[in-house]
Amino acid sequence: MNTITNKISQSIMTRIRFNYVWIVVGIIFLVLLSAAGIRATPSVMILPLEHEFGWSRTTISFVISVNIALYGLIGPFSAAAMQRYGIRPMVLGALVLLSAGTLLSTLMTMPWHMVLAWGIVVGAGSGVAANTLAATIVGRWFETRRGLAMGLLTASAATGQMVFLPLMAYMVDHAGWRAVALMVSCVAAVAIPLVVLFLPERPQDIGLTRYGMTGDVAPELLVSPRNPLAIAFDTLRKAVRVRDFWLLFFSFFVCGMSTNGYIGSHFIAMCSDYGILAVGGASILASMGVLDLVGTTLSGWLSDRYNPRVLLFFYYGLRGIALIFLPHAFGLSYFGLPIFAIIYGLDWIATVPPTVRLANDVFGRLAAPIVFGWIVAGHQLGAAGATMLAGYLRNSLGSYTASSVLMGCACIIAAIMVLRIHGHRTEEIHSVIPA
Image 1 (cartoon, rainbow, N blue to C red):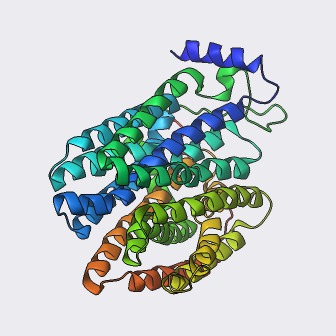
Image 2: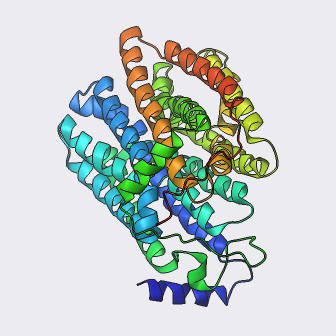
Image 3: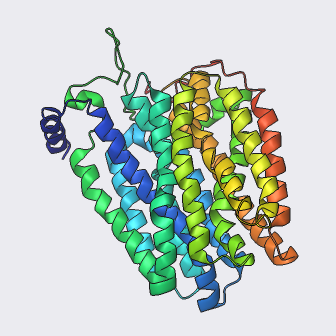
C-alpha cells in the first residue's frame, strides 16, 4: 500500500508546480475539518435529546465531557504511536472510529449508549485526528513556515464548525438529530480513500526534503521500534521536570475551559435561554468559526515572526474580556453579540500556533509533538471540567452568567501566567529516538 501511495504522489508531483507538502497539508486539513465537525455535533443535539429522551443537561454534558477528556488524553499516545506505526494507519483508524461511532449513535435509547458511542468511540477517534496530528505533520514535513502551516491546520477546527454547524442545526429542526449523525458518519468515511491514496508517510518517500530545508542536513530517524506507551510516559517523565511544561499545561487547561468546554459545548443552548433558536445560535457560532479561520492563520504567521509569549498574553487577555462581556451582550440589541463574536472569534484557537512554537523551542522538534500531546491533554481536561461545571451551574442558577465570568477571569490569570514562560530549550528529550 505504501508503494502504491508513493507512486501516486510522485505522479501528482510531476503535474503540479508547487511543493507536494501543500497537498499533504490540504489532506490533513480535510481530516481535521471532518473531525472538528463531528466534535461539534453534540452541541446541536443537547436540546433534541432533552426533548426526546428526557435526559437532563447535566447527563448530556457528562457525555460530552467524556468525549472531550478522551480527545485530550489520547493525544500523547497517538503522537507516540505515529512514531512507532506511522501517520497513515493511525489516521485511518481514527476515521473508522469516527464513522462507526456516529453511525452507532443513531440506535441509542439510553444514556450509557451515548457514553459508549459519542463519549468513548468518537472520543477515541477524535484524540487521533487532533492538534497533535497537525503538530506531527508540521514537524515531519516543514523546516520553515511551521507557524503558518500549524495555523492553517489548527484553523480547520474553526472551518469545521463554519461548514457543519448551521447545516446540522437546520437538519435537527427539519429531519431530526439522527439525520445529523448519519451525515457526519458519511463525511468521516469519505475522507478514508483520500488518506489511503494521497498521504505519504514522510517527504523522503517521494524524493523530497522538509519544506525549506537547505544544505546537507541528515534527516532524523522518525520511526521508533519502542512501545508507544513507553515513549509517551518517558517523554512525560522528562517534561514534568521543566517549569515551562507546567506553565504551558495550565495555560492550555484554561484555553480548553474557555473554548471547547464552555462556548463550544454550551453556546447554542445558552442562546436558547435568550429566545434565539438553534439555527440562529449555530450561525453565530459558525460566524466565529469564520473569524477564527482568519485569526488562527494570522496567528501562525505572527508566531514565525514575534515573541509567542506576548502573543499568548494578548490572546488570553482579549478572550477573558470577551467572556466577561458575554452575559451583557445579549441585552445590547443588535450590537452586543456581533461585538462578542468579533473579539472572541478572532482568537478562539489562535493560542495553538504560539503554544506549539514554544513546545518546539523548549523540547526540540522530535519530542515536541508528544509533549504537545500532553499539553493538549491539559486543554481537554479543562474543557471536560468546564462542560460539566457550566451544565451544573446552569441547572442550579438558571443561567450561564456565573460560568461566563468564571471563564473570563481564568483567561486573564492565564494571560499573566504565560509571560513567565522562558521559551528557551533547557533539555533535548531523546525518548522519541530509539536507542
